[in-house]
Amino acid sequence: MDKKPFVIMVASQKGGVGKTTIAINLAAALIYQDYRVLLVDTDVDSFSVMEHLGIQGVGNGFKEIVAGKAEIEDSLFVYQNIDLSIILGSPADDAVTFKPDQLVKFYSQLVKQNYDFIILDTKPGMFPSSIARYLNDVVIVATPDSPSIASSSKLASYCEKLKVPRRLVINRAGYSKFELSKEDTEKMFGDVAFVMVPEDKIVPESLSKQKPVYLIDRGSPFAMAIDQIARVYGLKAGDVDNSTTKSKRKGFFERMAWWGAKTNKK
Image (tube, rainbow, N blue to C red; front, side):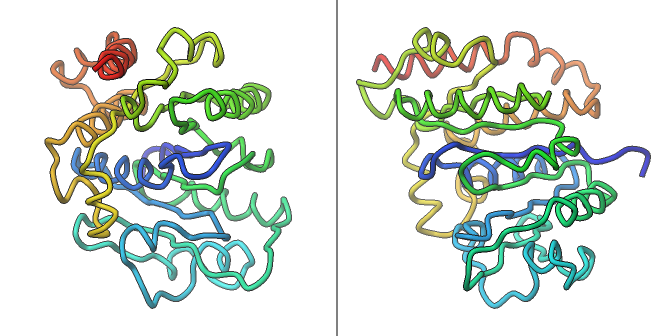
């Protein structure tokens, strides 16, 4: 492989904002754009990827690999519906705390894997500073309310301190008439690019069916928003060179923010 995979961490400061849904569907969108993708569930407390995709009866996962009890190559699960490689979360009976050197060893091996993109689904809160060097971008997922945006700004400041690029994805835009506007979000969050992903009834349907939205309705508003984010990452990683896709890059975040604001007014 000529270059290392582009590593995207999908994070949030609080739970229940749709982080895992965003991570799974971003991975699916990148696969549909012909990229090789590895999804890693690093949350040892809930291992949500398994629940979202209806996966059962797996062996080793993230916890065993980091602890040195298993190898990455021997612990990959392939979600055959979209040929998505996954390192799954694995149940932990007690609280698990990894040493910095364990995490560094894991991520140093992870970025040597033969993928174009690696998507990390994380547990809520700050990520270990020891792994910052391996991240190309952090997607901070929040809902369009004041507490969620305010807590997300703390995570953004943490990323800035570690010099890790970050962007905000505001999920479920248009859900409530009381949600923050684009302008209020900018005041609270600062000068960081953000995308508004619209509230869409296809999402609870996908959770019920335990399938990515992409396998149910790729033309849905949610899937189209995620698809556009994936195209931006294709450009950001330097892998896309066709003029049609390039033309979508200019003003993308402004257009998506406008779309969410317009949805909010309905």
